[in-house]
Length: 205
Image (cartoon, rainbow, N blue to C red; front, side, top):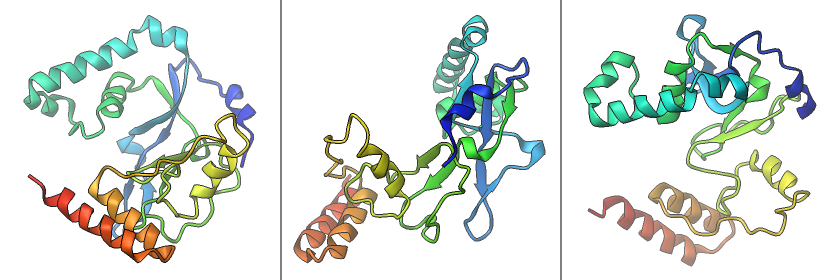
């Protein structure tokens, strides 16, 4: 992957932050970057001018918007967002026309759930940051998507190398993945246990 040192060379060009396009999905579920006239950035990676951020009170403005729509949900119409990604939507509103869009290599979006990117085995060679989005993460023991190897390889050479992976899922979809983890490893009793737990979790009122 590309060198992180490249990040410090980004010219913000009098903007408050450098960001990367978020994406939507095409008809068959593959990610595509948003069109030029529908700019919307992903907040998972932001290169920020902290002095300008503080000066312009960006955090405070975002919090005020979120408080407003929490108290008055109908206000969402005014902003034009559904606020499913709360901080990200607020940041897109407050920082509109105050960000510089940079290459996707700085925030490569990878959903490593079994139903997403199942055919994606590698990332582009110039990738600098991988953003594991979605409910399945590489630090989950039950995640066996091939792209998890990047996180786990770096974990092994980090100060956190002895920290264990998360062992027990708490959401029903994670429990289903955990069951598949055990099926793959030939432990069908535990697989059945987690399948049953996932069903109970899903339909529990």
